[in-house]
Amino acid sequence: MRGIVLTACLVIFTNIWAVGEGESNDTTVTDVSYKDALAEAEQFMNRLDDKVSGWYSDRAFSYIDTAFNDSTSIANVPDSVFIQRLKKLSEETVIELPFNERVKAHIAVYTDKKRAVTSEILGLTDYYFPIFEEELDKAGLPIELKYMPVIESALKPRAFSRAGASGLWQFVYYTGKQYHLNVNSYVDERRDPRKSTQAAIKYLSDLYDIYQDWYLVIAAYNCGPGNVNKAIRRSGGKRDYWEIYYRLPRETRGYVPAFIGAMYALNYYKEHHIIPVKANIPMHTDTLIIQEPLHFDQVSAVLNVPEEVLKELNPQYRRDIIPGGSKSYTLTVPVSVTGQFVELQDSIFNYKDDIYFSEKRETVDPTASSGYVPSSIAGKTKLYYTVKSGDNLGYIADWYDVRISDLRYWNNIYRNLIRVGQRLVVFVPTSQKNKYVSINQMSFAQKQGTASYTASTAPVQTTTGHDPDYIYYKVRSGDNLWLIARKFPGISSDDIKRLNNLTSNSISPGQLLKIKPKG
Image 1: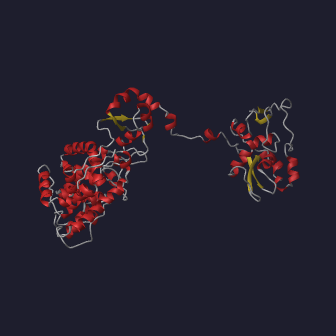
Image 2: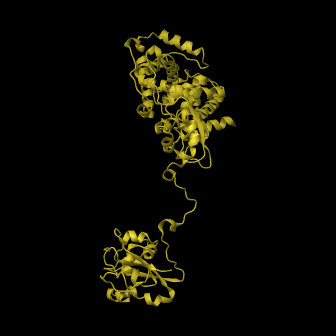
Image 3: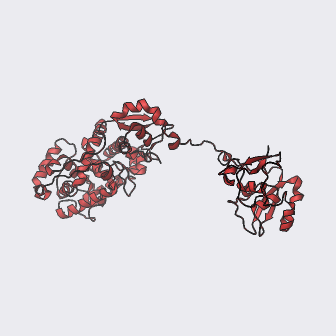
């Protein structure tokens, strides 16, 4: 049953390496020229450059010039030297390390053509290799598998392929989910160094259960077991990587030679005068458990830790936010600030928390934010009014004794925009239906005659004439109708103009404005 599940799910995993040459019936790899192999190897590395896009070159490294003597160029090194060096390496590895023109080409890329990339990778091995080695040892897998992320991502946890593969081990979304890596808008555990390593080890272990051969496992990791199985069938059942080489997908053929080339380069870089470039990542860290939402800026501001350092140590957080809440998350920090974090954690979580985090509402009351509550239409009759030339919402609201805000709400009107011929819904008390039913047929003068007041340009009196049934507001310096209306939920500037017979937005300090009925 297990094998069936694996065949169904593991084939999902893909990678973007696309190097090599066309299909051939040959079953050996010794017939290729070194020049052609080198061109393929350079293509392979260029695709790696596309993945990482120079992100670390700008942020994680302090560059220094690497010494290079032309006499140490790979062109001047006899093949026997490479064979001897690989033989020495293989004394400590389970996975064999053969030599051929394709392996030599990848050695050339790492030690000559892409020396700067190799320098960067060497700078990162001090941080990432201990993680890989610990997890591989715990699982009982060959330690030399730690070189796989070198050819997958150049040890860049934010590496992202065109096929959607992400992280040090380049998991695509569905395979990551299959191996319990959480991916959502805040977190991408494919970029978590330890969790992605644990997932990759499970994946590699499952593949080894199928093939019992590490080079076939490495090939299947790249192109999926379905493609490896197809290559085995087409080769008449042969189960040696080099014998099925030309039956594999083009993008997979360079994968094993690159693996051997990377292992060689990272062990014999001194012989090629390559100097590791130190990465600006703290080598000594602690991992803290976080159970509340936390932004990197909060940690950075209180503990004076550069935000870039937090990003480097915690690449799994996509928005520099640890979501917290119902589950716990980890935060990796320099060991030098662990004590400070524990001591100052209240200050850290409280620092500008109202800016970085707002409560996610479980229930919503539309009136809570707008302040507007539509008038009830219970016990009211629906009437229709057809807009005529010269009409505006203020007039229509006055003719029917309704609020402009209600008129907008009933008719889904944005601002005060209405057009001639538009049919508006109006709700009026059923007991007064006869008073309003004929308004739609009246002339403008007749409708104005029904209004509760007539328009006037006279200013509102500020000391006398108060209507005890209304709430008033005294205009202050700097006020305008919009600002005043905001002080009273459910009231608009047009409502104030209508109640106070204003024909413009002009008001004066000291002026007394009628706002709304009491009660």
